[in-house]
Structure formats: structure tokens, C-alpha cells
Length: 264
Image (tube, rainbow, N blue to C red; front, side, top):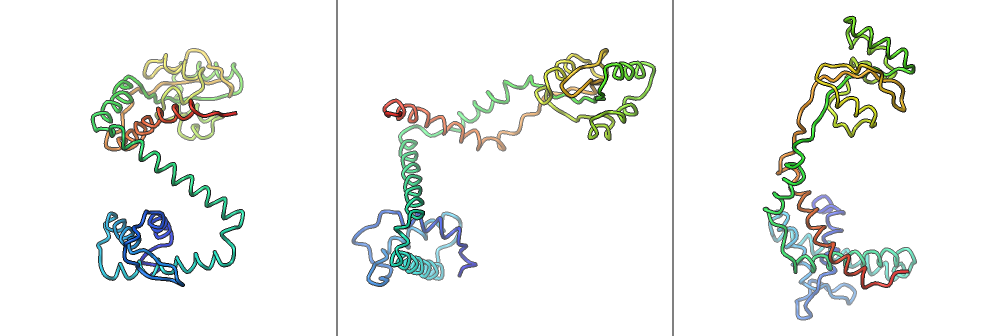
């Protein structure tokens, strides 16, 4: 049985079921040491399994019934040992209570406002990515040295026809040195300001005329290519955008609650 229903799955599902409202007229599923387990609890758990794609069946119901009985036995044993009154358990129960109340409040609030539509998601996607279509990525190489005169010497050697990839072997940046100074594709914000300012001014294939000083030392930079940043497909980022828009739906509630609260 434990393999069929994992502990984490049962824990989350049965917790939700245990906290569901039950009808006093519902037929009892079982009576354990004089305490009834309402039949509605079984139906609630079955619905959750069905929603996850698990077909309803007599075997499933027998399995769930046994698990509910075992849970009740464990809970009664914990009560009899006074575990429910321990400070740590009381703290966890209070935290669980707060979590349940907060989720219920959020669901209640969102049910009263219009749901996030596909059109809203599309507009937000275009705002984030369509408007940012002008953003560019740069593929650059660099050679990093400690002294300015050494960087100037490298620039002079390049002007005489030395290969950038060969001279990059002396770079302090060991990682890129092994790749001929290649830094791969990056947006300007990836680099420190002095480096990115010098890089974006270059035309493709050009090398900085003067060493570029940063906190790391002196750089000789060559720009290999530039391209527009490719936006991720809406199918990939749509769910995250929808979550962002739903969070914004809660901002009004948050502001209202803080405005009414007395916080010291």
C-alpha cells in the first residue's frame, strides 16, 4: 500500500481532506475507538485522486479507507501521549492554521476579481519582450593583464597582425584564455560598466584602441558579433506571467489590509 500511495502524496491530500467541512448526516466510513470517520472524507480524497488522473475503483477506495483508519489511529495515539500539547507541535499546528487561512483568503479574494485572461498574458508578454526587442547581445573577446603598458603592447602587436587568440593565452582570465579570450554571448549588463561601455562602442571585428581599466586590471577587447536578444516563446513564459499578474491582483488587498492595520 505504501508504494501505491506515497507518504508525501497522502500527507498533502489527506491533510486537505481532514480539514474539509463534513456533513453531520454523512454515513460514517468507520468508527475507531469510538470516534467516527465521516464518509465524506473518503469521497473528498477520491475526488482529488481522480482530478490527478487516477481512476476511481473499489480497490482505491479500500486502500484510502485503510489509510484514513491508520491516520486516525496514529492521531489518537499522539493525543493519548500528550504530543498534541508539546510546544513544537503547537507551533507547527498554528503555522499550518495560518497557511490554510491565508490560502483560503487568497482564493476568496481572487474569486471576486476577474481572472487573468489569455489576452492579458499576451499583452504583458509583449510589454516585457516585444518592447525589449531592441536589446542586444554581444560576443566579445578580451585579454586581461595587470599593467597598462603590457595592454598597450598587446594592442600594438595586434595592429602588426598577431592573432588575438594567440595573445589571449597570456590573459589573467584563465577561463577565457583557454578559449582564445572568448566571453560567449552576453548582454552589456553582464559586465562591469567600464568594460561594457567600451565594448558597445566597438564595431564588429574592432579592437579597443586604448586599454580599458576596470577593478580587475587592464583589458584589450575585441567585438566579434552583435545580435538581437531572442525572446522566449510565450508558451514557455506564459505560466510565469500569469502568476505575476495574479500576484498583482493581490496588491490591492495587501494595501487595504496594511492601511487598516495598526502596526508598531
